[in-house]
Length: 391
Length: 161
Image 1 (tube, each protein chain N blue to C red):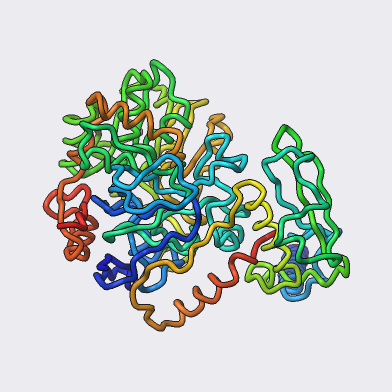
Image 2: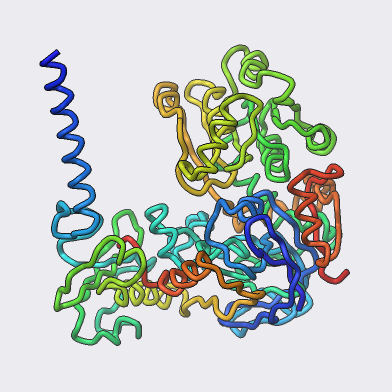
């Protein structure tokens, strides 16, 4: 079958790969309906997560139809239309049972890599390097889904494929950020990054009762989406001094909750961007934490900063003094989607969460290199490039 | 001036000593202070999300049972209701290897580390999660790819424990 693969740094290919097989009793084989690019894929393409091998199938945000079930699967049958969470959780370990699904003890067959990097291994993720398990990704006609009773969710009738697709990753990641940051009714919440994840974090914060939600980015089309489809306020960081604007909007306090949805390749108009770029390219730091620094600086005393963008390793000039002296709570997570997807699908079925606007460009698998180029370079207002394997 | 020079020399000597100790400890395990990423007792442990009474050391899962008398096994309650701490160590107590050998899964405890992880999965889930064969495209031969492939093969046995 044809699949979109990682061929090397900044090199995407389309090539023939073998069809997946059921390997464990709790697997299903899914016929992929839609599979979408994610900002975190760009870290793989850029070589910032050096655990990809040429030929690895990309993609971790997808939906489709169940084509085959393992003998231990009880919740799904052939023909079910499902959306699948990007992370693989066993459902039986202590972390899964606490709802911390991305931390599953049993989801990553290569735990040695992330133990070396972080001290502990986290769960596995589709199409996201051998450090997170080496699972094949979803930019292909078929994908194997382990622990499918936990990670695959039946899509309600009436919810379109294009909407349900984002219940795989963007929405549950946003839900993880707002929920785990502990947004309270009446809070002012600032979100750095107006991509799919930032928009969904803003939406969840609004649903949790935040009084004002402000999303920060520099791309007009993404900020327009935030205002039109999410209903949050926006700031263009190339036009205004973000911490100053946030202080003014909050009576000098700063936001109660600051959610960073940018990740390790943050951009900034100031000189610190050049500094971070040089250090990252020389491998003196793995990540550019520009937005995290600004979030820490902007956050009110005693507030919470949540790192939702993907980071890999170590950063420089981290403002620990501000964290300590302002009594901030600093948290982070990959998505614990299994606990949020039922709520998200229910809200989608009631039109309270809408995501179709994120799918700005839908194309075939053959257009994989073009789709990633458009997504990376934000060509033609591309917010997300979506692949339809059946096209 | 003399005093300043003396202070600078002293600082330089101390810094040099630290560097030498760090380098020695990286390449020579015997030079590492106690607790340098390994336990003195040789126990490796995983926490299993089951009641301690449900983890029967007389009926160990196959990956651990295969070691027979070559290992000792302990089970104790994990605090805070976190299940049972299942610990094992090799009776012959071999050298624990270097940090590097533990991270690349080539230390003498590598097989036991892997067996503990698989035993935990069997107790909690009932099966060991597989990943191969995973669909993939052409594996271009590169030095980086070869290194990653080698580490991937070792990663199930590697770790900081």
